[in-house]
Amino acid sequence: MKVAVVGATGLVGSKMLQVLAERNFPVTELFPVASERSIGKEVAFKGKNYKVISYQDAIAAKPNVAIFSAGGSTSLELAPKFAEAGITVIDNSSAWRMDPSKKLVVPELNADALTADDKIIANPNCSTIQMVVALNPLHKRYGIKRIVVSTYQSVTGTGKKAVDQLFNERKGAENGPMAYKYAIDLNVIPQIDVFLDNGYTKEEMKMVNETRKIMRDDNILVTATTVRIPVVGGHSESVNVEFADDFSIDEVKQLLSEAPGVVVQDDPAEQIYPMPLWAHEKDEVFVGRIRRDETQPNTLNLWIVSDNLRKGAATNAVQIAEYLAGKGLL
Ligand SMILES: NC(=O)c1ccc[n+]([C@@H]2O[C@H](COP(=O)([O-])OP(=O)(O)OC[C@H]3O[C@@H](n4cnc5c(N)ncnc54)[C@H](OP(=O)(O)O)[C@@H]3O)[C@@H](O)[C@H]2O)c1
Figure 1 (tube, rainbow, N blue to C red):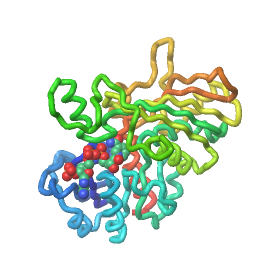
Figure 2: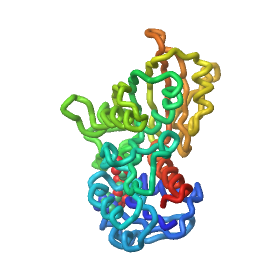
Figure 3: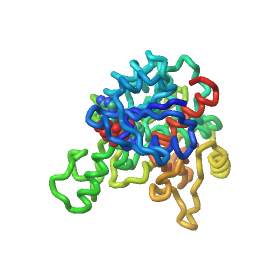
Figure 4: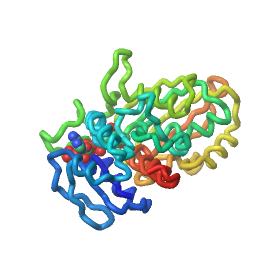
């Protein structure tokens, strides 16, 4: 497989290279692409250095697949150019996710919908991916009516500049790069992405709309509050979910422990529950604090943690590529 990684110098792009190598994706040629400022710089893949090239050179090399993590506007401009050249694009930005002509894919849930005609495939938002991977097996069994989610999101979700801001603040360095309007160290910022007219942020509405699209059910009600915290290992989510049918906690744990990509970490007696500290550099979605909401019927509380750069971005994209390659669709 000839593979282009667009945004190869970024946080997600570097993780993409790492995950492609770790999972032994059959890369025969690699074409790293970034902005014009980075052309000629080198990125490492499987112990070898590769020079960053322009997108034009990458298209001319006719890769089988191009995995994009270079921001929404770059994707809007460049993904169609790759697709027109017959190259399958797997895109990590929000540019194509809600386009009705594009599939929004979490392989555990809906990769079966992909065909050779899908030339631009969208990778969902990181906070949505981890939530739907955990909730889908429960939805199939009990039918989700409503989800109330609050997130505790890692600075790695914002990109390199945000990680630099956090560590600069921690060192006490002054005049460092500011990815956020406010300090993030020793703080919590209840805003992720821009505010919309309805008072919610774009990140919050991504969780509402993407969940319905991926789970193929517009009746699922979702309300979200998304929050940035000074953490690097992954995103955490407090999820309250109301089902149509009643459940038993034992069966919920059983369903989750059998679900692909999910690990149950739930032993209050031993103080075992998911944390970014443990989820960091892992591909799975970790679920714990599984308990009945005692204030209303058929309602469950969960705590869901995953490494947003892996399952929330790079791993999910590489799994899509693996599915396409396995089905001969690339
Ligand atoms: N971080 C996450 O958890 C996460 C999760 C899911 C999706 N995403 C999405 O992935 C994308 C990248 O995120 P990130 O965290 O990796 O950001 P980042 O660390 O800031 O990296 C951005 C990457 O995009 C490249 N780029 C910028 N403009 C470009 C252009 N005109 N042409 C080609 N490449 C260009 C940059 O190249 P230079 O180095 O040359 O500037 C860099 O490689 C965003 O769309 C983000 O929403 C992120």
